[in-house]
Length: 247
Ligand SMILES: *Cc1c(COP(=O)(O)O)cnc(C)c1O
Image (cartoon, rainbow, N blue to C red; front, side, top):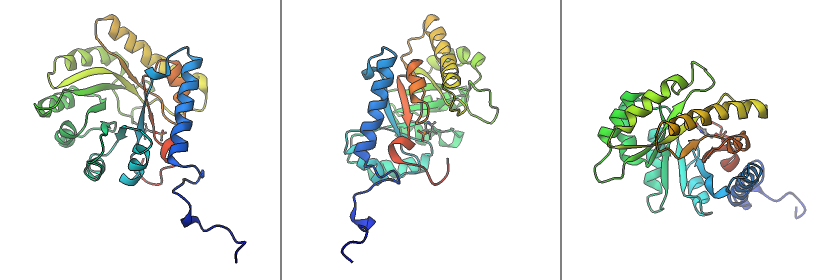
């Protein structure tokens, strides 16, 4: 009896990888620092957005206890439930999922950032519905660089006109571009996709847009994204473990 395996429920919360939230956060921060060093960039110029979709408020609270403040969510109702449960914490919430017109008010009222703006109609609704007492909603235009028709995001050729239109909206502050390239384990292909986003970003800046944000890089490709200039990496799996339900 006394030499049997330790019962699992007596151990602290772990993923299947056997690590704690603090260990996973440190490991991701180390990856960011190493990638920034290799790109001769300051690691402080790359911020970490923890993507908590499908994980419960308790998992967010555990990571917040390690010092993480910025969290990304893809589903409005799921996010609102977590925000309510975590109201005692000073967290900043980013909406990163596809946006339906009937959800714009909830997004405008409850998030600091939106990374996934890809239509003027959605941008106009977010601007009009942003409460007057809050700072402008910080937004990125989502660019579809992989040309996958099923994916969200605006075609690269349409980005300049959309940026010009969004820049005129009073409830929004356009910060930059976001992209979710098609997943690949080929580092060269990862970098080529991120480079396209950065070139579009550089073009917009050359045209006079004051942009400072490139939201790109996830658990599998954050190194390539940082090499190509990412300023926000959006990390889910490497922080919370594998997702077992939708997305
Ligand atoms: C789920 C998701 C992420 C995080 O992906 P991981 O591979 O789990 O790190 C990042 N960005 C968006 C838009 C997502 O939907």
